[in-house]
Length: 90
Image (cartoon, rainbow, N blue to C red; front, top):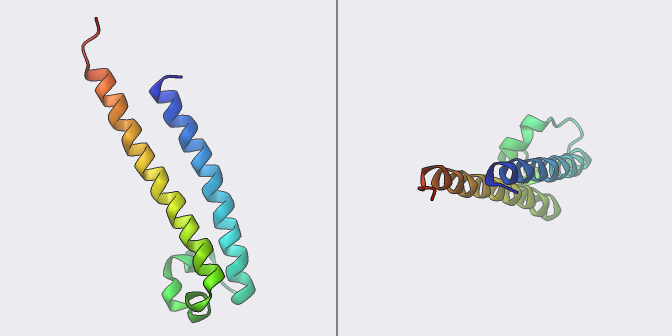
């Protein structure tokens, strides 16, 4: 598998994992505060019940880790693709 296809496959995989984790975090949040929207999850500090709940914090941290890993792998693969396209063939 070449680097471009690998990048697309990693991105698809991470998108799926992030979507599943976002849904899980939203379910937990709505148990604590039923009126919350997805946008509210970006400002947890405005919602003390979420901010103090260890289970929510754990799952939200897992989501943040998946997002960070996606960015790191995308950057690494982008550099690898760039290096491959710049290296002399021969």
